[in-house]
Image 1 (cartoon, rainbow, N blue to C red):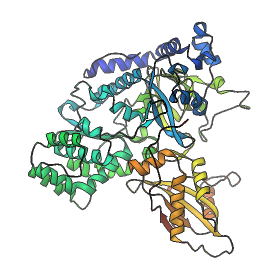
Image 2: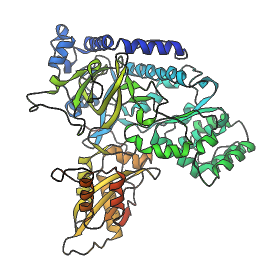
Image 3: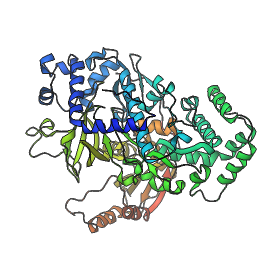
Image 4: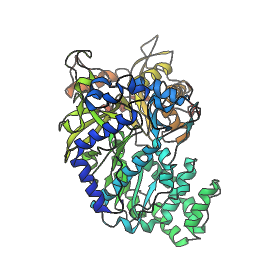
Length: 597
Protein backbone atom coordinates (compact mmCIF):
# COMPACT_ATOMS: atom_id res chain seq x y z
CA UNK A 1 0.00 0.00 0.00
CA UNK A 2 3.07 2.27 -0.22
CA UNK A 3 3.45 3.10 -3.94
CA UNK A 4 6.94 3.57 -5.30
CA UNK A 5 7.68 6.56 -7.52
CA UNK A 6 10.35 9.19 -8.17
CA UNK A 7 9.45 12.25 -6.04
CA UNK A 8 11.48 14.49 -8.36
CA UNK A 9 9.07 13.58 -11.18
CA UNK A 10 6.26 16.08 -10.70
CA UNK A 11 4.07 14.60 -13.41
CA UNK A 12 4.33 11.08 -11.93
CA UNK A 13 3.55 12.39 -8.45
CA UNK A 14 0.45 14.27 -9.57
CA UNK A 15 -0.76 11.24 -11.55
CA UNK A 16 -0.33 9.06 -8.47
CA UNK A 17 -2.36 11.57 -6.44
CA UNK A 18 -5.12 11.41 -9.06
CA UNK A 19 -5.09 7.60 -8.99
CA UNK A 20 -5.28 7.47 -5.19
CA UNK A 21 -8.16 9.91 -4.94
CA UNK A 22 -10.09 8.52 -7.92
CA UNK A 23 -9.99 5.02 -6.45
CA UNK A 24 -10.47 6.06 -2.82
CA UNK A 25 -13.24 3.55 -2.07
CA UNK A 26 -11.38 0.54 -3.54
CA UNK A 27 -8.14 1.54 -1.83
CA UNK A 28 -9.89 1.91 1.52
CA UNK A 29 -11.29 -1.61 1.24
CA UNK A 30 -7.84 -2.93 0.30
CA UNK A 31 -6.28 -1.11 3.27
CA UNK A 32 -8.75 -2.65 5.72
CA UNK A 33 -8.33 -6.10 4.16
CA UNK A 34 -4.55 -5.85 4.48
CA UNK A 35 -4.71 -4.66 8.10
CA UNK A 36 -7.10 -7.46 9.07
CA UNK A 37 -5.11 -10.10 7.15
CA UNK A 38 -1.97 -9.13 9.00
CA UNK A 39 -3.43 -8.57 12.44
CA UNK A 40 -6.49 -10.81 12.79
CA UNK A 41 -4.51 -13.16 15.08
CA UNK A 42 -3.51 -10.40 17.49
CA UNK A 43 -4.89 -10.68 21.00
CA UNK A 44 -6.97 -7.53 20.59
CA UNK A 45 -8.71 -8.46 17.33
CA UNK A 46 -9.16 -12.13 18.32
CA UNK A 47 -11.38 -10.97 21.17
CA UNK A 48 -13.86 -9.62 18.59
CA UNK A 49 -13.27 -11.50 15.34
CA UNK A 50 -13.29 -15.24 14.63
CA UNK A 51 -9.94 -15.62 12.85
CA UNK A 52 -9.61 -15.99 9.07
CA UNK A 53 -13.32 -16.32 8.35
CA UNK A 54 -14.05 -12.98 10.00
CA UNK A 55 -11.49 -10.71 8.38
CA UNK A 56 -13.90 -8.75 6.19
CA UNK A 57 -15.34 -5.26 6.28
CA UNK A 58 -18.81 -6.36 7.41
CA UNK A 59 -17.56 -8.36 10.40
CA UNK A 60 -15.13 -5.61 11.32
CA UNK A 61 -17.88 -3.00 11.39
CA UNK A 62 -20.34 -5.22 13.23
CA UNK A 63 -18.02 -6.64 15.86
CA UNK A 64 -15.07 -4.32 16.55
CA UNK A 65 -16.03 -1.41 18.84
CA UNK A 66 -15.26 2.27 18.37
CA UNK A 67 -12.83 3.21 21.17
CA UNK A 68 -10.87 6.07 22.72
CA UNK A 69 -7.41 6.16 24.27
CA UNK A 70 -8.52 4.98 27.70
CA UNK A 71 -9.88 1.80 26.05
CA UNK A 72 -6.57 1.17 24.24
CA UNK A 73 -4.28 2.25 27.06
CA UNK A 74 -4.10 -1.12 28.93
CA UNK A 75 -2.98 -2.94 25.76
CA UNK A 76 -0.39 -0.29 24.85
CA UNK A 77 0.83 -0.20 28.46
CA UNK A 78 1.47 -3.96 28.43
CA UNK A 79 3.67 -3.57 25.33
CA UNK A 80 5.39 -0.61 26.99
CA UNK A 81 6.09 -2.88 29.98
CA UNK A 82 7.70 -5.55 27.81
CA UNK A 83 4.96 -7.92 26.60
CA UNK A 84 4.83 -9.06 22.98
CA UNK A 85 3.84 -6.70 20.15
CA UNK A 86 1.28 -9.23 18.94
CA UNK A 87 -1.13 -7.97 21.56
CA UNK A 88 -1.91 -5.33 18.89
CA UNK A 89 0.28 -5.89 15.82
CA UNK A 90 1.73 -8.83 13.89
CA UNK A 91 4.74 -6.64 13.05
CA UNK A 92 7.14 -5.70 15.86
CA UNK A 93 6.29 -2.42 17.55
CA UNK A 94 9.68 -0.70 17.47
CA UNK A 95 8.79 2.47 19.33
CA UNK A 96 5.91 4.34 20.93
CA UNK A 97 5.04 7.80 19.68
CA UNK A 98 4.09 10.36 22.32
CA UNK A 99 0.96 12.32 21.57
CA UNK A 100 0.52 15.96 22.60
CA UNK A 101 -2.54 14.78 24.53
CA UNK A 102 -2.16 13.25 27.97
CA UNK A 103 -3.77 10.54 30.08
CA UNK A 104 -3.37 10.63 33.84
CA UNK A 105 -0.90 13.49 33.49
CA UNK A 106 1.44 11.51 31.20
CA UNK A 107 1.72 11.59 27.40
CA UNK A 108 -0.46 9.26 25.39
CA UNK A 109 1.53 6.52 23.65
CA UNK A 110 0.85 5.36 20.10
CA UNK A 111 2.26 2.09 18.66
CA UNK A 112 4.55 2.36 15.65
CA UNK A 113 6.30 -0.18 13.42
CA UNK A 114 9.31 0.12 11.10
CA UNK A 115 6.99 0.20 8.09
CA UNK A 116 5.34 3.36 9.40
CA UNK A 117 8.53 5.30 8.71
CA UNK A 118 8.33 4.24 5.05
CA UNK A 119 4.69 5.35 4.99
CA UNK A 120 5.65 8.78 6.41
CA UNK A 121 8.44 9.11 3.85
CA UNK A 122 5.94 8.43 1.07
CA UNK A 123 3.62 11.05 2.57
CA UNK A 124 6.35 13.71 2.70
CA UNK A 125 7.38 12.91 -0.86
CA UNK A 126 3.80 13.49 -2.05
CA UNK A 127 4.04 17.11 -0.87
CA UNK A 128 6.81 17.90 -3.36
CA UNK A 129 4.92 17.53 -6.67
CA UNK A 130 1.95 19.46 -5.25
CA UNK A 131 4.18 22.45 -4.43
CA UNK A 132 5.93 22.17 -7.80
CA UNK A 133 2.56 22.44 -9.53
CA UNK A 134 1.91 25.84 -7.97
CA UNK A 135 5.39 27.31 -7.45
CA UNK A 136 8.03 27.34 -10.19
CA UNK A 137 11.76 27.05 -9.70
CA UNK A 138 11.95 25.28 -6.36
CA UNK A 139 14.89 23.28 -7.73
CA UNK A 140 16.92 26.50 -8.13
CA UNK A 141 17.44 27.20 -4.44
CA UNK A 142 16.93 25.96 -0.89
CA UNK A 143 14.41 25.94 1.92
CA UNK A 144 15.29 27.36 5.33
CA UNK A 145 13.27 24.91 7.38
CA UNK A 146 13.80 25.06 11.12
CA UNK A 147 13.37 21.52 12.41
CA UNK A 148 13.89 20.35 15.99
CA UNK A 149 13.93 17.17 18.04
CA UNK A 150 12.43 16.79 21.50
CA UNK A 151 13.29 14.62 24.51
CA UNK A 152 12.86 10.86 24.44
CA UNK A 153 11.49 8.70 27.24
CA UNK A 154 12.46 5.11 27.97
CA UNK A 155 9.60 2.73 28.71
CA UNK A 156 10.08 -0.02 31.33
CA UNK A 157 10.82 -2.49 28.51
CA UNK A 158 13.44 -0.23 26.93
CA UNK A 159 11.31 0.90 23.99
CA UNK A 160 11.81 4.52 23.01
CA UNK A 161 8.84 6.83 23.43
CA UNK A 162 9.19 10.11 21.57
CA UNK A 163 7.26 12.65 19.45
CA UNK A 164 6.49 11.59 15.89
CA UNK A 165 8.71 14.26 14.29
CA UNK A 166 11.64 13.38 16.54
CA UNK A 167 11.20 9.76 15.47
CA UNK A 168 11.24 10.73 11.80
CA UNK A 169 14.25 13.10 11.99
CA UNK A 170 16.28 10.43 13.82
CA UNK A 171 15.34 7.72 11.31
CA UNK A 172 17.58 6.43 8.55
CA UNK A 173 14.82 7.40 6.09
CA UNK A 174 15.46 11.05 6.96
CA UNK A 175 19.19 11.02 7.70
CA UNK A 176 20.03 9.05 4.54
CA UNK A 177 17.30 10.50 2.31
CA UNK A 178 18.13 10.54 -1.42
CA UNK A 179 19.10 13.89 -2.87
CA UNK A 180 16.03 15.73 -4.16
CA UNK A 181 16.77 18.96 -6.03
CA UNK A 182 13.30 20.25 -5.13
CA UNK A 183 13.76 19.71 -1.42
CA UNK A 184 17.22 20.93 -0.39
CA UNK A 185 17.37 22.64 3.02
CA UNK A 186 19.90 24.99 4.59
CA UNK A 187 20.17 23.14 7.92
CA UNK A 188 22.69 20.28 8.15
CA UNK A 189 21.32 17.14 9.82
CA UNK A 190 23.70 17.69 12.74
CA UNK A 191 22.00 20.98 13.66
CA UNK A 192 18.52 19.45 13.45
CA UNK A 193 19.54 16.50 15.63
CA UNK A 194 21.18 18.66 18.32
CA UNK A 195 19.40 17.94 21.60
CA UNK A 196 19.96 21.45 22.95
CA UNK A 197 17.15 23.46 21.37
CA UNK A 198 18.93 26.81 21.84
CA UNK A 199 22.12 25.61 20.14
CA UNK A 200 20.03 24.00 17.40
CA UNK A 201 18.08 27.23 16.80
CA UNK A 202 21.23 29.36 16.70
CA UNK A 203 23.08 27.06 14.29
CA UNK A 204 20.12 26.63 11.94
CA UNK A 205 19.53 30.40 11.77
CA UNK A 206 23.25 30.98 11.17
CA UNK A 207 23.19 28.54 8.26
CA UNK A 208 20.04 30.19 6.88
CA UNK A 209 21.59 33.65 7.03
CA UNK A 210 24.85 32.57 5.37
CA UNK A 211 22.86 31.02 2.52
CA UNK A 212 20.28 33.84 2.33
CA UNK A 213 20.83 34.41 -1.40
CA UNK A 214 19.79 30.79 -2.09
CA UNK A 215 16.69 30.65 0.16
CA UNK A 216 13.43 30.29 -1.78
CA UNK A 217 11.13 29.30 1.08
CA UNK A 218 11.03 29.57 4.84
CA UNK A 219 9.30 27.30 7.30
CA UNK A 220 8.92 25.19 10.41
CA UNK A 221 6.31 22.61 11.30
CA UNK A 222 4.16 24.87 13.50
CA UNK A 223 3.63 28.62 13.33
CA UNK A 224 4.53 28.89 17.02
CA UNK A 225 8.00 27.40 16.45
CA UNK A 226 8.64 29.64 13.45
CA UNK A 227 7.76 32.79 15.40
CA UNK A 228 10.03 31.73 18.25
CA UNK A 229 12.81 31.61 15.66
CA UNK A 230 11.99 35.15 14.50
CA UNK A 231 12.11 36.38 18.10
CA UNK A 232 15.38 34.48 18.65
CA UNK A 233 16.84 36.19 15.57
CA UNK A 234 15.73 39.59 16.89
CA UNK A 235 17.47 38.93 20.22
CA UNK A 236 20.64 37.35 18.82
CA UNK A 237 21.38 38.95 15.44
CA UNK A 238 24.47 40.88 16.71
CA UNK A 239 26.18 37.62 17.71
CA UNK A 240 25.04 35.86 14.52
CA UNK A 241 26.44 38.70 12.41
CA UNK A 242 29.69 38.64 14.38
CA UNK A 243 30.06 34.94 13.55
CA UNK A 244 29.42 35.60 9.84
CA UNK A 245 31.92 38.47 9.91
CA UNK A 246 34.71 36.36 11.43
CA UNK A 247 33.80 32.95 10.00
CA UNK A 248 33.59 31.43 13.46
CA UNK A 249 30.88 29.99 15.70
CA UNK A 250 29.97 31.43 19.13
CA UNK A 251 31.93 29.83 21.96
CA UNK A 252 28.75 28.75 23.79
CA UNK A 253 27.94 26.34 20.94
CA UNK A 254 29.46 23.31 22.62
CA UNK A 255 27.97 20.57 20.44
CA UNK A 256 31.01 19.63 18.35
CA UNK A 257 29.04 18.08 15.47
CA UNK A 258 26.98 21.28 15.22
CA UNK A 259 30.08 23.45 15.23
CA UNK A 260 31.82 21.43 12.54
CA UNK A 261 28.79 21.30 10.23
CA UNK A 262 28.19 25.06 10.55
CA UNK A 263 31.87 25.95 10.07
CA UNK A 264 31.87 24.05 6.77
CA UNK A 265 28.93 26.19 5.60
CA UNK A 266 30.43 29.47 6.88
CA UNK A 267 33.55 28.69 4.88
CA UNK A 268 35.54 31.61 6.27
CA UNK A 269 34.86 35.30 7.10
CA UNK A 270 32.24 37.27 5.16
CA UNK A 271 32.17 40.85 6.50
CA UNK A 272 30.10 42.17 3.60
CA UNK A 273 27.25 39.73 4.26
CA UNK A 274 27.47 40.42 8.01
CA UNK A 275 27.08 44.17 7.39
CA UNK A 276 24.07 43.61 5.11
CA UNK A 277 22.24 41.40 7.62
CA UNK A 278 23.10 43.65 10.57
CA UNK A 279 21.77 46.73 8.76
CA UNK A 280 18.49 44.96 7.96
CA UNK A 281 18.03 43.64 11.50
CA UNK A 282 18.83 47.05 13.04
CA UNK A 283 15.77 48.65 11.42
CA UNK A 284 13.33 50.30 13.86
CA UNK A 285 10.41 48.22 12.60
CA UNK A 286 10.55 44.52 11.84
CA UNK A 287 7.44 44.64 9.68
CA UNK A 288 8.24 42.63 6.55
CA UNK A 289 11.67 41.68 7.90
CA UNK A 290 11.55 38.14 6.49
CA UNK A 291 11.11 39.36 2.93
CA UNK A 292 14.01 41.81 3.39
CA UNK A 293 16.46 39.29 4.83
CA UNK A 294 15.52 36.51 2.41
CA UNK A 295 14.39 38.49 -0.69
CA UNK A 296 13.94 35.48 -3.00
CA UNK A 297 11.48 33.74 -0.68
CA UNK A 298 8.27 32.66 -2.40
CA UNK A 299 6.26 31.49 0.65
CA UNK A 300 6.38 30.51 4.32
CA UNK A 301 5.49 26.91 5.06
CA UNK A 302 3.97 26.47 8.52
CA UNK A 303 0.81 24.88 9.89
CA UNK A 304 -1.66 27.71 10.54
CA UNK A 305 -4.84 25.68 11.00
CA UNK A 306 -6.48 24.73 14.29
CA UNK A 307 -4.93 26.42 17.33
CA UNK A 308 -2.08 27.73 15.13
CA UNK A 309 -4.51 30.13 13.39
CA UNK A 310 -4.04 32.54 16.30
CA UNK A 311 -0.53 33.30 14.97
CA UNK A 312 -1.60 34.40 11.48
CA UNK A 313 -1.63 38.19 12.18
CA UNK A 314 1.88 38.08 13.67
CA UNK A 315 3.18 35.97 10.77
CA UNK A 316 1.68 38.42 8.27
CA UNK A 317 3.38 41.32 10.07
CA UNK A 318 6.85 39.77 9.80
CA UNK A 319 6.38 38.19 6.36
CA UNK A 320 5.50 41.27 4.35
CA UNK A 321 2.56 39.61 2.66
CA UNK A 322 4.18 36.34 1.58
CA UNK A 323 1.77 33.39 1.23
CA UNK A 324 1.38 31.24 4.35
CA UNK A 325 1.26 27.62 3.27
CA UNK A 326 -0.18 24.78 5.39
CA UNK A 327 0.76 21.64 3.49
CA UNK A 328 -0.18 18.69 5.70
CA UNK A 329 -2.47 17.28 8.37
CA UNK A 330 -0.85 14.64 10.57
CA UNK A 331 -0.63 13.39 14.14
CA UNK A 332 1.20 10.85 16.29
CA UNK A 333 -1.45 8.26 15.47
CA UNK A 334 -1.25 8.59 11.69
CA UNK A 335 -0.45 10.93 8.79
CA UNK A 336 -3.78 11.87 7.19
CA UNK A 337 -3.89 14.28 4.29
CA UNK A 338 -2.32 17.05 2.24
CA UNK A 339 -3.40 20.48 1.03
CA UNK A 340 -3.57 20.20 -2.73
CA UNK A 341 -4.28 23.93 -3.11
CA UNK A 342 -1.33 25.17 -1.03
CA UNK A 343 -1.46 28.85 -2.01
CA UNK A 344 -5.01 29.36 -0.75
CA UNK A 345 -5.76 31.74 2.12
CA UNK A 346 -5.14 30.23 5.57
CA UNK A 347 -8.87 30.45 6.32
CA UNK A 348 -9.62 28.33 3.23
CA UNK A 349 -7.18 25.48 3.91
CA UNK A 350 -8.64 22.02 3.32
CA UNK A 351 -6.82 18.72 3.50
CA UNK A 352 -7.43 15.86 1.07
CA UNK A 353 -7.19 12.57 2.93
CA UNK A 354 -4.89 10.04 1.26
CA UNK A 355 -6.85 6.76 1.30
CA UNK A 356 -3.78 4.48 1.52
CA UNK A 357 -2.49 5.92 4.83
CA UNK A 358 -5.02 4.16 7.10
CA UNK A 359 -8.63 3.02 7.18
CA UNK A 360 -10.76 6.09 7.89
CA UNK A 361 -14.23 6.35 9.40
CA UNK A 362 -16.22 9.32 10.67
CA UNK A 363 -18.62 9.98 13.54
CA UNK A 364 -21.17 12.74 12.84
CA UNK A 365 -21.06 15.59 15.37
CA UNK A 366 -23.33 18.57 15.95
CA UNK A 367 -22.32 21.67 13.98
CA UNK A 368 -22.61 24.11 16.91
CA UNK A 369 -21.66 22.14 20.00
CA UNK A 370 -19.38 19.61 18.28
CA UNK A 371 -20.79 16.85 20.46
CA UNK A 372 -21.79 13.51 18.96
CA UNK A 373 -25.24 13.38 17.43
CA UNK A 374 -27.53 10.86 19.10
CA UNK A 375 -31.23 10.29 18.57
CA UNK A 376 -31.97 8.65 21.88
CA UNK A 377 -29.61 7.26 24.48
CA UNK A 378 -26.10 6.06 23.79
CA UNK A 379 -27.22 2.48 24.25
CA UNK A 380 -29.91 2.68 21.60
CA UNK A 381 -27.69 4.35 19.01
CA UNK A 382 -24.08 3.33 19.39
CA UNK A 383 -21.09 4.87 17.63
CA UNK A 384 -20.86 1.74 15.50
CA UNK A 385 -24.39 2.37 14.15
CA UNK A 386 -23.75 5.98 13.17
CA UNK A 387 -20.28 5.73 11.70
CA UNK A 388 -19.69 6.76 8.06
CA UNK A 389 -17.08 5.56 5.56
CA UNK A 390 -14.54 7.89 3.93
CA UNK A 391 -16.35 8.20 0.60
CA UNK A 392 -19.81 8.59 2.17
CA UNK A 393 -19.30 11.75 4.22
CA UNK A 394 -21.44 14.73 3.23
CA UNK A 395 -20.20 18.19 2.26
CA UNK A 396 -20.87 20.75 4.97
CA UNK A 397 -21.22 18.18 7.76
CA UNK A 398 -19.02 17.91 10.86
CA UNK A 399 -17.36 14.66 11.93
CA UNK A 400 -14.94 13.25 14.46
CA UNK A 401 -12.14 11.28 12.80
CA UNK A 402 -11.87 7.54 13.56
CA UNK A 403 -8.85 5.55 12.32
CA UNK A 404 -7.67 1.98 11.96
CA UNK A 405 -3.91 1.80 11.38
CA UNK A 406 -1.43 -0.79 10.19
CA UNK A 407 0.43 -0.42 13.50
CA UNK A 408 -2.33 -1.53 15.86
CA UNK A 409 -5.02 1.09 16.46
CA UNK A 410 -8.53 -0.15 15.62
CA UNK A 411 -11.54 2.14 15.23
CA UNK A 412 -9.74 4.69 17.37
CA UNK A 413 -11.29 8.13 17.93
CA UNK A 414 -8.53 10.65 17.27
CA UNK A 415 -10.42 13.53 18.89
CA UNK A 416 -10.18 15.89 15.89
CA UNK A 417 -13.34 17.64 14.68
CA UNK A 418 -13.37 18.14 10.91
CA UNK A 419 -15.76 19.78 8.44
CA UNK A 420 -16.20 18.35 4.94
CA UNK A 421 -15.53 21.14 2.44
CA UNK A 422 -15.79 19.10 -0.77
CA UNK A 423 -14.19 16.27 -2.69
CA UNK A 424 -11.19 15.80 -4.93
CA UNK A 425 -12.35 12.98 -7.19
CA UNK A 426 -13.74 10.43 -4.69
CA UNK A 427 -11.59 11.55 -1.73
CA UNK A 428 -13.19 14.03 0.69
CA UNK A 429 -11.53 17.28 1.71
CA UNK A 430 -11.72 18.55 5.28
CA UNK A 431 -11.04 21.74 7.14
CA UNK A 432 -9.70 21.25 10.65
CA UNK A 433 -12.20 22.73 13.11
CA UNK A 434 -10.81 21.96 16.54
CA UNK A 435 -9.38 19.40 18.90
CA UNK A 436 -12.16 17.96 21.05
CA UNK A 437 -12.24 19.34 24.62
CA UNK A 438 -9.18 21.60 24.20
CA UNK A 439 -9.66 25.16 25.49
CA UNK A 440 -6.05 26.42 25.62
CA UNK A 441 -3.10 25.73 23.34
CA UNK A 442 0.08 27.71 22.66
CA UNK A 443 2.40 25.13 21.11
CA UNK A 444 2.01 21.34 21.31
CA UNK A 445 0.20 21.66 24.66
CA UNK A 446 -3.52 20.93 24.73
CA UNK A 447 -5.22 21.90 27.99
CA UNK A 448 -8.85 20.89 28.46
CA UNK A 449 -11.55 22.59 30.50
CA UNK A 450 -11.13 19.82 33.08
CA UNK A 451 -7.34 20.37 33.24
CA UNK A 452 -7.92 24.06 33.82
CA UNK A 453 -10.61 23.52 36.45
CA UNK A 454 -8.40 21.16 38.48
CA UNK A 455 -5.39 23.48 38.28
CA UNK A 456 -7.40 26.53 39.34
CA UNK A 457 -9.02 24.62 42.20
CA UNK A 458 -5.57 23.58 43.41
CA UNK A 459 -4.13 27.10 43.22
CA UNK A 460 -6.88 29.52 44.36
CA UNK A 461 -5.94 31.49 47.50
CA UNK A 462 -7.58 30.35 50.74
CA UNK A 463 -8.25 33.91 51.94
CA UNK A 464 -10.51 34.73 48.98
CA UNK A 465 -13.56 33.33 47.27
CA UNK A 466 -12.92 32.76 43.56
CA UNK A 467 -16.33 33.77 42.22
CA UNK A 468 -15.56 33.19 38.51
CA UNK A 469 -12.67 32.64 36.12
CA UNK A 470 -11.91 32.33 32.44
CA UNK A 471 -8.79 32.19 30.27
CA UNK A 472 -7.25 32.89 26.91
CA UNK A 473 -4.07 32.11 24.99
CA UNK A 474 -2.07 35.32 24.62
CA UNK A 475 0.03 35.03 21.47
CA UNK A 476 0.97 38.71 21.24
CA UNK A 477 4.04 37.78 23.26
CA UNK A 478 6.67 35.38 21.88
CA UNK A 479 6.52 32.75 23.19
CA UNK A 480 2.82 32.92 23.95
CA UNK A 481 1.45 32.27 27.41
CA UNK A 482 -1.71 31.36 29.29
CA UNK A 483 -3.73 34.20 30.83
CA UNK A 484 -6.29 33.51 33.56
CA UNK A 485 -8.86 36.13 34.57
CA UNK A 486 -9.88 35.70 38.21
CA UNK A 487 -12.66 37.52 40.03
CA UNK A 488 -11.75 37.35 43.73
CA UNK A 489 -13.94 38.32 46.67
CA UNK A 490 -12.60 38.67 50.24
CA UNK A 491 -14.17 36.12 52.55
CA UNK A 492 -15.07 38.58 55.30
CA UNK A 493 -15.93 41.94 53.69
CA UNK A 494 -17.13 43.46 50.42
CA UNK A 495 -14.19 45.81 49.88
CA UNK A 496 -12.00 45.39 46.81
CA UNK A 497 -9.46 42.60 47.34
CA UNK A 498 -6.08 43.58 48.74
CA UNK A 499 -3.71 41.53 46.64
CA UNK A 500 -0.43 40.27 48.01
CA UNK A 501 2.06 40.07 45.12
CA UNK A 502 3.95 37.06 46.48
CA UNK A 503 0.70 35.19 47.16
CA UNK A 504 -0.57 35.79 43.63
CA UNK A 505 2.76 34.82 42.04
CA UNK A 506 2.62 31.59 44.02
CA UNK A 507 -0.91 31.04 42.65
CA UNK A 508 0.45 31.37 39.11
CA UNK A 509 3.15 28.80 39.85
CA UNK A 510 0.70 26.40 41.50
CA UNK A 511 -1.53 26.48 38.41
CA UNK A 512 1.48 25.60 36.25
CA UNK A 513 2.55 22.81 38.62
CA UNK A 514 -0.94 21.31 38.30
CA UNK A 515 -1.04 21.34 34.50
CA UNK A 516 -0.02 18.26 32.55
CA UNK A 517 3.29 16.76 31.43
CA UNK A 518 3.26 18.34 27.95
CA UNK A 519 2.58 21.86 29.25
CA UNK A 520 5.36 21.55 31.84
CA UNK A 521 7.79 20.19 29.22
CA UNK A 522 6.98 23.12 26.90
CA UNK A 523 7.65 25.56 29.75
CA UNK A 524 10.68 23.85 31.24
CA UNK A 525 12.57 22.10 28.45
CA UNK A 526 11.32 23.50 25.13
CA UNK A 527 10.84 27.11 26.34
CA UNK A 528 7.94 27.28 23.87
CA UNK A 529 5.46 28.69 26.41
CA UNK A 530 6.02 31.79 28.55
CA UNK A 531 5.17 32.26 32.26
CA UNK A 532 1.50 31.91 33.15
CA UNK A 533 -0.28 35.16 34.01
CA UNK A 534 -3.22 35.81 36.34
CA UNK A 535 -5.16 39.05 35.85
CA UNK A 536 -7.46 39.83 38.75
CA UNK A 537 -10.59 41.72 37.69
CA UNK A 538 -12.94 43.88 39.76
CA UNK A 539 -16.10 42.47 41.35
CA UNK A 540 -18.99 42.35 38.89
CA UNK A 541 -16.81 41.88 35.80
CA UNK A 542 -18.30 38.48 34.95
CA UNK A 543 -21.82 39.93 35.25
CA UNK A 544 -20.79 42.44 32.58
CA UNK A 545 -19.38 39.59 30.49
CA UNK A 546 -22.74 37.79 30.72
CA UNK A 547 -24.59 40.98 29.72
CA UNK A 548 -22.32 41.32 26.70
CA UNK A 549 -22.87 37.71 25.62
CA UNK A 550 -26.65 38.10 25.94
CA UNK A 551 -26.50 41.29 23.87
CA UNK A 552 -24.72 39.25 21.18
CA UNK A 553 -27.56 36.70 21.07
CA UNK A 554 -26.83 34.21 23.88
CA UNK A 555 -29.83 32.89 25.82
CA UNK A 556 -30.03 34.15 29.40
CA UNK A 557 -31.37 30.74 30.45
CA UNK A 558 -28.56 28.77 28.85
CA UNK A 559 -25.64 31.12 29.46
CA UNK A 560 -22.65 29.75 31.29
CA UNK A 561 -19.29 31.43 31.76
CA UNK A 562 -16.93 30.40 28.95
CA UNK A 563 -13.74 28.88 30.31
CA UNK A 564 -11.83 30.33 27.36
CA UNK A 565 -12.61 33.61 25.61
CA UNK A 566 -11.65 34.43 22.04
CA UNK A 567 -13.86 37.33 20.95
CA UNK A 568 -12.37 40.81 20.95
CA UNK A 569 -15.40 42.26 22.71
CA UNK A 570 -15.19 39.83 25.63
CA UNK A 571 -11.44 40.38 26.03
CA UNK A 572 -11.95 44.13 25.96
CA UNK A 573 -14.46 43.91 28.83
CA UNK A 574 -12.15 41.72 30.90
CA UNK A 575 -9.02 43.79 30.27
CA UNK A 576 -10.78 47.06 31.04
CA UNK A 577 -11.52 45.83 34.56
CA UNK A 578 -8.12 44.40 35.53
CA UNK A 579 -6.95 45.54 38.97
CA UNK A 580 -3.77 43.46 39.18
CA UNK A 581 -1.46 41.44 36.92
CA UNK A 582 0.81 38.67 38.20
CA UNK A 583 3.20 36.19 36.56
CA UNK A 584 4.72 32.90 37.60
CA UNK A 585 8.25 33.57 38.83
CA UNK A 586 9.56 30.03 38.55
CA UNK A 587 9.56 27.33 35.90
CA UNK A 588 7.38 24.30 36.76
CA UNK A 589 9.15 21.04 37.48
CA UNK A 590 9.57 18.61 34.61
CA UNK A 591 11.74 15.54 34.65
CA UNK A 592 12.60 13.28 31.74
CA UNK A 593 11.54 10.13 33.54
CA UNK A 594 10.72 6.67 32.28
CA UNK A 595 7.07 5.74 31.89
CA UNK A 596 6.10 3.66 34.89
CA UNK A 597 3.24 1.25 34.58
